Length: 236
Image 1 (cartoon, rainbow, N blue to C red):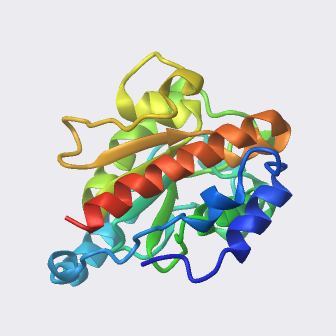
Image 2 (tube, rainbow, N blue to C red):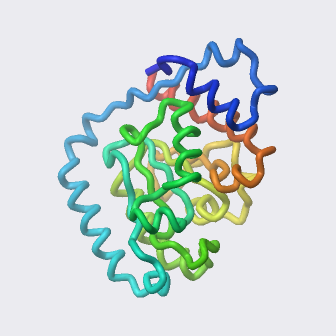
């Protein structure tokens, strides 16, 4: 499916300060395919919902200190049958209050980022590496990540996406089992023996982009790369 109009694209790079990067020729020819094949996945939808409920119950029983300071478990949202899954690092205070990932300013920016290549909550599934907000919105420590990671990996396997977008360094390093930082990882896609046939794309976290506006240009080029991969796959 092509983007129906270029308004969202224009708004995206205007709001993120990308005006000087793109020509009319580039924006005019952008084509995104998000018309994913769903037949096989939809046939297991009921089973998938059951597996997700069971996983959420397992996570609720975890012995982790974050539960003592958080208001809500933040599990996931969106289309469980989506071909695209987006994974962040940990909930913030607004996510914690709502019990949903990517709320507030960070969520608004992520919506623009994904929307610029035709992705919405109807064709994506959103979650985090860690399921509870760390106190004071601090970065989750390694013990917290290690405790949640097996459940996050199980979460990904249940959703079974074709494409996995990883937001930020902590998430990317944990899922890809690497010591490389996000600056080294972004701009390419990766395969993982743990997630068969899933194409994995590390990009900057929206929170990082809010604080580091000069890196926003790189994110748009990453999005063009992701959309090209999805578009080519959809045309096979």
